[in-house]
Length: 220
Length: 292
Image 1 (spheres, chains in turn purple, red):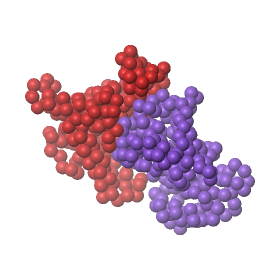
Image 2 (tube, rainbow over the protein chains, first blue to last red):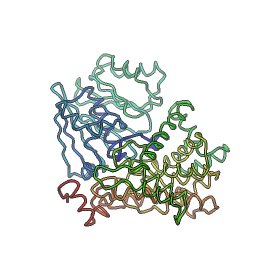
Image 3 (cartoon, rainbow over the protein chains, first blue to last red):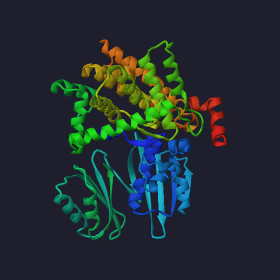
Image 4 (cartoon, rainbow over the protein chains, first blue to last red):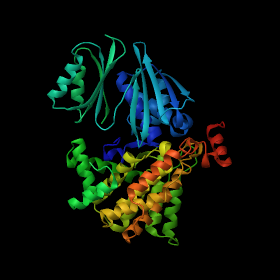
């Protein structure tokens, strides 16, 4: 079941006009921002399918940028997000892609600054709900049924155990977990679905662990 | 956790509780939140809906100029008293339009289940409120009942116009509203499901064809008729009329119709009303250039 909460249906409270193309788009941008951990200096946004055809009318472009500026779906600054980003010196580029994707509302967000970059593919599945299907080339398989966290870490022994120990300490049960890496000893990713909601202070504690670079909650 | 309408109704009957109560209990169970937290969160959403209706019936205008002001026209018409259909139904239509006009003007709304279909549930709620004088708690319960039916549609079919056409958005919203009206009016859980089925049956096949890709034309008026549809279906169900096709099968039919609908008619602004000469002309005027 993709939708878990009644507030996925009666909600979110948001700036119009479209839950999938505005609120969902803002959430895709905000997950990217959260994973990047700071305001990017530039952003290249590729839009596919219905996103590519109707983004001007729906404000999908301003919403994704609003998300990158860390605005929530009901933040009225979304309307002026592109202007605000330009004032802050962020370089923006939008690409209307012709390719057919599995989901009609797909966006590829590549953001960065002089210290690094991040690439994320998100889909907006309706009513403001989103799924992240790819992160920095890692394919993500999240059911969306449960709260989930993404942990970007260095590929070292003990990193996975240290994260699961903290979760155990707070009596949080892991329902599904995937670990992947690109090369031995380089950047790796843990995708963890849990049964309980994870509070922000636990995320902060995880982030303090050695070799853990970034922790983000992506499903509430 | 209920997976379909049949299970939802069965749960309500076996526990001798309302649909709204089943939804509240499930929400507490799934999220680990307390009853008070869950109710308070929904109350906040109710307040946002109320503010949007109030703002809309005073009159708003979208940036494109395509929509706005129709909720006001209808309220003035109702006041004159010479209407043909009925006061509650026209009030529901006016308040649905009000919400969607605020949405089109990039105002703050609560998606129910989506922003493009955000008018139907609050529109009917605030109209039926005038007739039934519910308590605040009963108004919050209305939203949980609507949410319970929307939850089933979202998980078994779709609530996305890009995936399933307008039937998935305004169709779902209307079915949700019809079920919630029935519960507020004292109908049984079975009658809620019948109202949902009757409503959705009459929304099957509805395409998503927004002019210029804007959530304005025909979205605002589709919400108007969605609200009217919900009101009539609720009355039919309360009269004891049932749907020959069970609610879950109607939802499944909606899903399959959505899958076979051409992409041009699923929120791409390439077909339907968006592709009419006037639709294209408006698009060219708004964006300054024609987009093929």
